[in-house]
Length: 81
Image (cartoon, rainbow, N blue to C red; front, side, top):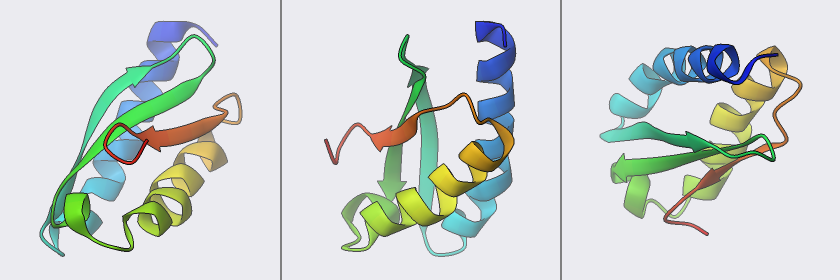
C-alpha cells in the first residue's frame, strides 16, 4: 500500500479510537509512520501518565490498527519508549 494511503488509513483508525481515550481524560496524537511500518503516537492527558498506558496502547490502539492494516508492524508511544 502506498505510504500516503497507509498514513491516511492509520490516522482514520486513530480517530475512531480517540473518543474511547477521551472519555477517560486521555488523548492520542499520530506522530509518524516509520519506514519500517511502525506507527509512532503520543498518548496524552490521563493516558500519558496512566499505569495501564502500555496495555491500552497494545490492546486497543495497536489491535485496531493491525486488524485493518496488516502491513503495520507495531505501534509505539514516543513517551513510553
